[in-house]
Amino acid sequence: MCGIIGYTGGKQAAPVLLKGLERLEYRGYDSAGIAVINNGNINAIKTAGKISALAEKTDGGSKLTGTTGIGHTRWATHGAPSDVNSHPHLSENGEFAVVHNGIIENFAELKSELTAHDVHFTSDTDSEVIAQLLQYLYDGDMIRTLRKAVTRLIGSYAIGIIHAYSPDTVFAVRKDNPLVVGLGSNENFIASDFAAALEYTHDFVQLDDGDIAKLTPRAVTFYDANGKSAVKTPYRVDWDISQAEKDGYPHFMLKEIYEQPKAITNTVRPRVKGNEIVLDRIQFDAGNVNRIERIDIVGCGSAYHAGIVGKHFMEKYCRIRVNCELASEYIYSDPITDCRTLTLVISQSGETADTLAALRLAKKRGSHTIAIVNVMESAIARDADDVLYTYAGPEIAVATTKGYTTQVAALYLIGLKIAKIKHTVSDARYNELLKELLDMPKKIEVLLSDISDIKSYAEKFSDRKCVFFIGRGTDYAASLEGALKLKEISYIHAEAYAAGELKHGTISLIEKGTATLALITQSDLYTKMLSNIKAVQSRDGTVVAVSSQANTKISETADGMLVIPVCDDDVTPILTAVTLQLFAYYTAFERGCDIDKPRNLAKSVTVE
Ligand code: F6R
Image 1 (cartoon, rainbow, N blue to C red):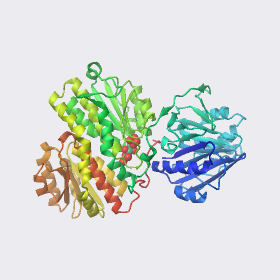
Image 2 (spheres, rainbow, N blue to C red; image 1 turned 90 degrees about the vertical axis):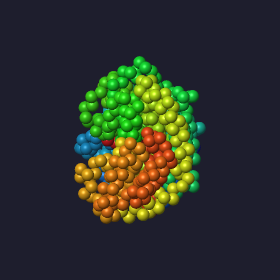
Image 3 (cartoon, rainbow, N blue to C red; image 1 turned 30 degrees about the vertical axis):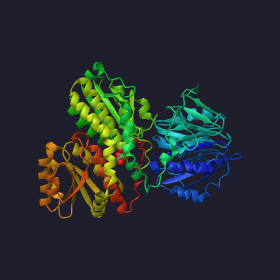
């Protein structure tokens, strides 16, 4: 969703802001703008459309002189994408410029109040109200004014501000929306996420809700919600800027698919000591594990799908009931949870608003919460009782790939750890599964070494109106993710069905030309799945099976086959995921879609 960058230092600000906005492009946006202070005046240039259009309009930034400024990519919520609705928004007197990520829920009330005081608005956005409010409340002291302003705002926000009479200064404030401060050498930054400033610094400070930051080139001062100066501890991000570049791949998504062997290695390997699983600082012992009566897994989209895979694995090996819930449903379901429930909250970005709200609710009701998160120091990572990072590295493509498979791997680790402590898995099986997990990167490499069949089926099916994905058990869980991947990047209607459910309704949709991908990796379900394949074929549907060579009968039955390396049934969802990611990628490629930035989608969904 919206991206924020702010800069103060010795360089010309506009080119730095443009570069930062490019790094934030992946979050999803429809318009962009920058504002820079020059000799007590704020000059802004903004445009609907791409950053490249903004770069053109500003002549690479050279049309805006000045060393302090703010920039924004907007993902429209209130008001259509247009030049005037783009940020930064200026106050009527031009003294304040504001960029905002989030939603000001009471903007209509504030707007009428300010309009009654003769303030004139120019945009349809909720965000403009912040700039106008600052102008209205300004009493000569920016920190005091900001504190007054935020007490009037209801909703969620990360805000960057420049003020014509505060030279060389950027202000920032946040509540329920991500914002970091980047600490450079004689230059400082604010950013929605550190990717925007990683080229200049690896040292960051996370703002907490209610914090205000005041940045000048040589100093950053933090104030807490009461206006008292606060000491914040910086953290170091060891991600490399090259990890956030395409590195010769045509798309970030393809690069990230190919990074999965490394991402899984980084997630699993450091946690395996001998044959012990050590989950960083998370304390799992007989005392607390035996108290767990239920596990709730909560997430959105692919993170939720990872949770469903985890549910199958944990129920099988830990013999604990597992509920997997969509975060957006969980938060309004009055969940029954307490200290006997372990809540696993999954999020690649660590900033998804619904997931964060679910985490807070579970915690409030006494549940112990563990976050499985990729982005260090993100809100979810910080709020949870414990965190297990997935070490996938930066994920730039909107559609998650390595984020998802590392979440699945992390769930396997947690499941095996609990099962071992509870003695619900035999030592032999535990060792087998651990070995399978450690071997997984090699198997992904084998899969990635020949993708010709995947490409050719993607080409073949790229003109279809609808593709079904069917499977049973964990294959059904994996189908859900395969269908989501295909629909979000190729815009082909795709649905996942539990194969046994087809005959209860959906099979009526099968007709000549309907393409179905059937996932068959569970040995105990082979024969059932073969019957399901035949049922689809009897209605003239075309079925391509996704399975390993271990199941010889499949190639005789299905119309085609996508082969995955031989692997233990219980961990195959990682391999089927990689196959289906590539299938979605090449289908979208064939259709000429904007693969890394699919329409209407945002990488980090920071509003409910
Ligand atoms: C799909 C996808 C989304 C995310 C979802 C949750 O490819 O990327 O469905 O999985 O928005 O995002 P995180 O994991 O950041 O909470």
